[in-house]
Length: 432
Image (cartoon, rainbow, N blue to C red; front, side, top):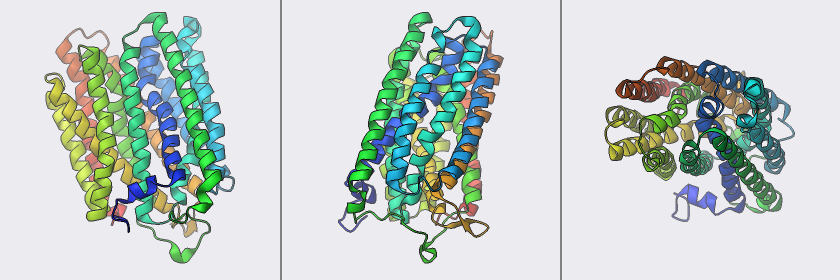
């Protein structure tokens, strides 16, 4: 709670620049979660790529994207050293990444013989341009001084991400219900809408950052490296390891979700409900986890959110092919748990940006988050290769029960194991 009797995240939300930052994160997350949720399905179903070709296209592009994040984080360590400077680069990235996304999602309109090289080329272009969109905006989290303010801003980021996931989940059934050329055109139109929203939200953040950040004394920001103020609540290596494990395992669920919706669930309403519940859980859980942090500790919040993720995943395993209400509830609980764990790990990465992180040297926020997103995207590349093998295994399987289990087992067991491994890493995370 802040001095005015309200939660810290509510105080941050009253500041114009952080409201705009949250909306900017919503626009960016629309594009990221579209790639997470729909790219694999788009390439196999809308474009007709074989599962292993799809896996190769996405995995290569993700690894290159992660490496670009790390390089760009180093290159921008001075150019994105302040919030307004980071916001300006974020706007430029929104223009380039949105245009690249539109080109990629037009793959279904390209002649069949050219689709694989076209998808690979435009997918790589999207990943490269997305780094400029992503890294400066992420680095802002490392420019906020004070653990409570940083955790609150991380929660606001995940609220924006949850709303973006919910938006994509609502749109996905409309895209999945189409076929052939009609579906390819729908994907292209969807990309155009995301591009416009991304540019508008990034522009608002840049305008707010230029106009008023220096006039907001209630929100502390890091202006110079005062070593006496440094605090290092987590080891950066442990944060990176935990985020890698969590991203790799959770991404399997995310990438198989459209296949589960299309093959196991029988109606557009059921598909939209289950996909939306994951997003709603991640969104609704953020105030809860910040409250647990305020009243207890980050360690308690992390352990509780991991327990929620494990419980939700196992419940999804039990009820996934049998009961829509229970499946939706399990999906919501899983989203709540995964959202809490991710929020706390991102807040911890922000803390590393204001502390001596490696060999006594202070890393710039862009460098810290370049490393973090490198780990996340390499983890996602591993996940997409796993997903492609699962899809190959299911090829030609005409038994509904086996098909359902072939999706539900990896969707649930892997996130459970990921959350358990993160709990094993908890003593090294130094969350307290």
